[in-house]
Length: 285
Image (cartoon, rainbow, N blue to C red):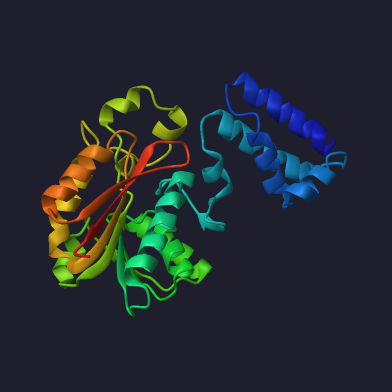
């Protein structure tokens, strides 16, 4: 079988199962170990049987609902490969915008200040914390998560990407409060999907990604309420808070931040798709 024939089979099969036809190309490129340009140049080559068998199994798995990222074991984020498995949420492109916004504000607010301490709350795969550290090596980064297997994977990502980060197990800000440390920056992309949304969401997400990283009560605001309530105990007098939010939640989250920090400059930022996706609070500046 030639490469293009395997690709045609996958596209037809996935279309029949109401899945993205392009997934076949991503999977086959992965199992052939080729760049996109090399892959496209190889379409008329013979495909090794061993490679086809792995590819066939992966296509069937995806047709059954398993996300491609969990099949191949990684997702790209901010130009780097992060290992992922079903213990962590798959990093999303919109979260790259949270990272970019945080980097820009850290640079503007703290400039050449040494030892800027940043905490990433609910780190998951570690994508946010690791990217912030690698893009701004002067940051002193701590990352927390409540789930041990998640932290283990995040630590593996930090090791493989050579990011010097302290990982701490605990619920939201509790481990930071217990340590008595104060932070210049707190960043978080907490679970924010209302439980009721489960009814219409893709089964690819519902059946495979961890619910504890997706859902947060009836209105999706449960984690924000707890997080923001705890923030004054861990922030320095001058601090930056950056939160990713679900579309339509920015006003509610902004109000929570304004109640906790009446003098703060609170800003809603829209993502590339025009959705209100981030809320930043500059406190004490």
